Image 1 (tube, rainbow, N blue to C red):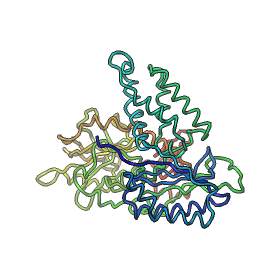
Image 2 (spheres, rainbow, N blue to C red; image 1 turned 120 degrees about the vertical axis):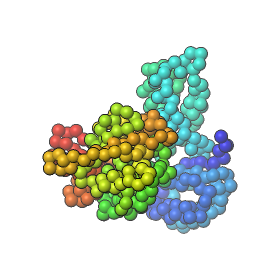
Image 3 (cartoon, helix red, strand yellow; image 1 turned 90 degrees about the vertical axis):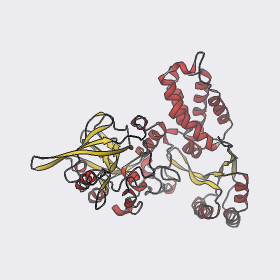
Image 4 (tube, rainbow, N blue to C red; image 1 turned 120 degrees about the horizontal axis):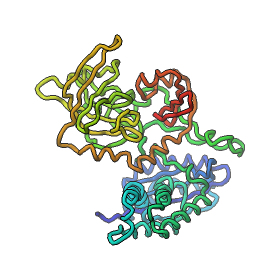
Length: 466
């Protein structure tokens, strides 16, 4: 593994009273300059510090540079010179920025993912792995905890690394025999951070930031400042998501549907996962938000299974696909078995799918299948189509996909699910809804937008995030 020579840091800027918004404006300009003039900058993000449900009074930046030369270049670059001059001329800051170099801030994320995705699940399954003759070496975990004791923690570092979730996983699994010193230190760190920053359950990752799962899609509006210094009646008063103006702004404007009109994996791997169909459409594995068959004028390329569209899935390598009779891509799927060679189609499974192969949450890519045959029947004055799908040989096994979503992806889902709700115009929701007509036409369903997804509240009070 190649040595990591990157330089990572957290900088905290405290503006004068009344100058926070101006500081944000200047940082937005500086960020634009960095992106266009500093190829050696890996990450340059700023956030308003959040304390509990309230907006704080300082800005936090998380920065990462390829190496010392890239960091030196940034210090002498256009963005730094611009910020230095503006801050001095306008008297923006109440005190000099507090800069903390975290040698392994990127590694902190890697350690967090390893603990959540691999170590805790493995130990929970086999507790003997942390005791006995062949016990796992936990020195890297102890080293990470020791480093965290000397780290000045901020909500932005937690939001970036999710290290607190890793510590919680260890504490929750302490009953299987985790070493007492590790459990106690994890609890001590969480207690210290919550005393400093408030309840950590309110700290959610920015899914729309660079590298986030919803990067490129519409983001909710920024949290406004409290009115007259008054705390709002509820946390949701700060969190009003931005309603897309048109359906095109949600999908076509953010992703080219034609990218999905290619046969094969198209650069995707078995087990790739998305929070919702909009994100999958943006990345080009499907071309619509309604779980319709992905097809062009001639043939189909992908199907996304949801609700009761999959049947007879008792064997991993085959199943029956029953699309809705109104799906415009049905005849294009039939066309895949015409000609000398049958074409393959990509198959994705939604967590809403009533199948033992469905993911716990989100939308997962399960590989390439061919149409082995199909049947058509007239049932209750409508045609019912059934396609027998056979999994293509020579690709990654389905076993890998069935481990998805992992802990890190489940945390992304938790952040996605934690968004606020509000009730926009019903007609707009119908236009923007990513779901099948059958889903949205069910009686007694109330629809509300939630972080770019859709929340369906049944009369009995049981909700589901789409």
